[in-house]
Amino acid sequence: MIELHRLGQDEPFQLNSDLIVTVEAHPDTVIALATGTRVVVTESPDEVAGLVRDWRVSITNAAWRSRREASPDPALV
Image (cartoon, one colour):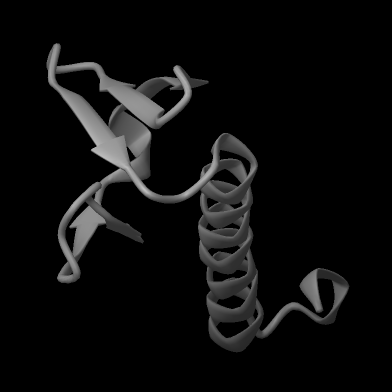
């Protein structure tokens, strides 16, 4: 989940980044979701891409950490 801000609202919201189909600037940033919903946010397309990338890296790192902690095999460390 990534934290974004809807255009015109101060309160942040969480978005499942796996639902993102496209991110475009028109000039506001419009995120199209797999559900057909469109969300207009204050973050730039580059910021959204960075948040998605950071989220996915954190998930991958957590999975590797978990695997290393659970495995007695030194080859996996």
